[in-house]
Amino acid sequence: MCVSRCLQCVGVSLVPMAIVCMLANFLLLLPGLQIHFLLEGHVTREATWATGLWGSGFLILIGARGFVLSSKTKGCCAFRGQMLYQLLYSCVCLLAAGFCCLVSATGLSQGPLCLYNTSSGPTWGVPLQPLPDLHVGYLYNRTLWSGVCLEPEGVVQWNVGLFSVMGGASGLQTVLCGANILNTLLGLVLGRGLGHNQVVASHLPSQQIIICSSIDCAAIGSCKLPVTVACSLLTSYFRLAWNPD
Image 1 (cartoon, rainbow, N blue to C red):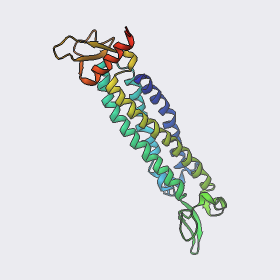
Image 2: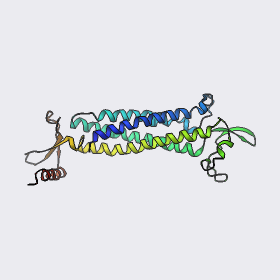
Image 3: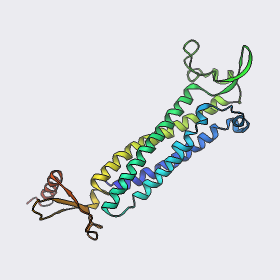
Image 4: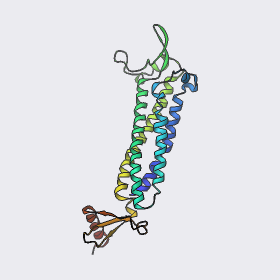
């Protein structure tokens, strides 16, 4: 297991998803690629919240950059310090991506803001939102996709496609950020990875065990982490595995 490699993989994987979310949210603000609907305030409410821009977009990009840079940190003390920061970043990114996924699902289920016919004439509203007395939702009745909204043209298909893409990408981001929380917790305990750690038995009266990086702790004597019973058992196991006789 290598904590550094997992950090780098998560950081690199989050970048294209963040770009996809930003593009999808930007296009949702321009139904039919026409800006006058945005200027007139005739854009779906969930799109105007711009969670794909600041949530699954900007915040995720900042977190991804931090993950990649932290994977290159040298020294056991410096690396564990970075893990504390990355744990905070991962929690923030998890909340941001989860919120964007929730908003996308809400926008998809409620339907777009559009101009539709009523008894008093054409009016702007959300005619496709689920109503117990009328219908359970337009997603299960595709005949409503082209027969209700007058403007913007094709707004139903536009919103369904883009909200689905943004919701799927932000959902994957949520899963990756959740996995990265577990990864950073392991980084706090194990350091950069099992392959980078060296177990050294000290001859102190308390018989404490010291675990440090095999490269940096040899040069930096201040980087020593005393560990008690659990590490003693782990060290005994490694000694038996390496020296069965």
